[in-house]
Length: 361
Image (cartoon, rainbow, N blue to C red; front, top):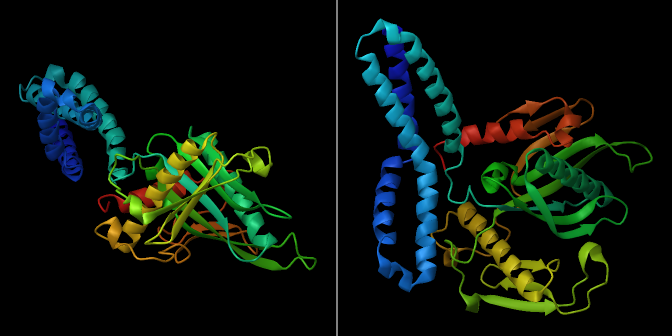
C-alpha cells in the first residue's frame, strides 16, 4: 500500500502544478460569477451581451470541468486508500493508472494558454528575394502546410494566391479552421531558410532561399482588438475571382489600410463586398494583435509603423545539400527525413516549440 500512497502523492503534486499554471481557481470563481449573471432574466435586455456571457461561461466550463472531476476522483481514491484494506489494492491500482492517463491528456491544455491559442488562424506565405528560386521554395512550403492540415484534420480555405511566373508562388493566404489552430501553428511564424542544389541553375549550384511564414489569429469583431474606424481607409476595386481569373467584374474586392501602422489587407475571394470586408477585418485584427505582441505594446494605438518582426527572425533551416537535415533554431529540434517533413510531418517541431513555451504564454 505504501507504493500506492507514493503514486497518489505524485499525482496530487502533478495535478496541483498544472492546476496552478492554468489558474483554475480564478476560472472557477469566474464560472460562479457568470452563472449568477446568466441566471438573471434582465441579462436578455441586451441579447449580444447575454450571448457573449453564455459563450464565455461555456468556454470556461469546458476547460475547468475535466480538471474538477479529476481532482474529485483523486481525492476519492485517497480516501479509499486510507481505509487500509489490502483487498482494495488491485482496484485502486487500476483507478490510479486511469487517473494518470487522464491527467497526461489534460496536461496538453498547458500548451494552449495564450490569449488567442484557441482561435482559428490565418497563414500567409511570402517568397523572399531571389526570383524563381524563392518562389519555388514558397510553393514547397505551401504544399507542406496543406499536407499538414490534411493529416491533422484542419480545414484550409484559400483567401489569396499569386502564382510565380515560372514556378511556385509569390504569396498565398489561407484561413485555417480547427481545434487550437492558432496555438498549434504559431510556432511556424518567422523566416524559413532552404539550402539545396538549384533545379533552376544550369550549373546545378547550391542555392539558399528564404520564405516568410506569418501566422495570425482570427479575431472576431467582439473580441479584444478594438480598431477605431477613423484609423481605417477602405478601398473597393474589381475582383479577379478565384485563381486570378477575370470572371468577376463587380467592385467586390476590398483593401483595408490601418493608417497609423500602414498595415494593408486585401481580400477578393469571397462572394460579396461585405464578406470580403468582414474577412479583411478579421485578418487586420490578427495582424495588429501579432504586432502588439511583437512590440510589447499596451494597446493597438501604441503600435509603431513598420515591418515589426516580419523578416527579422529565422526560425528553421531546411538543408538538402550537402547533407539532409531540418533544424529549428529556437528549440534545436531536428529531423533527418527531409522528404517526410516537406510532406507535412512537422508535428515534432510544433510539439518541441509548445513544450518549450509552457508557462511563458
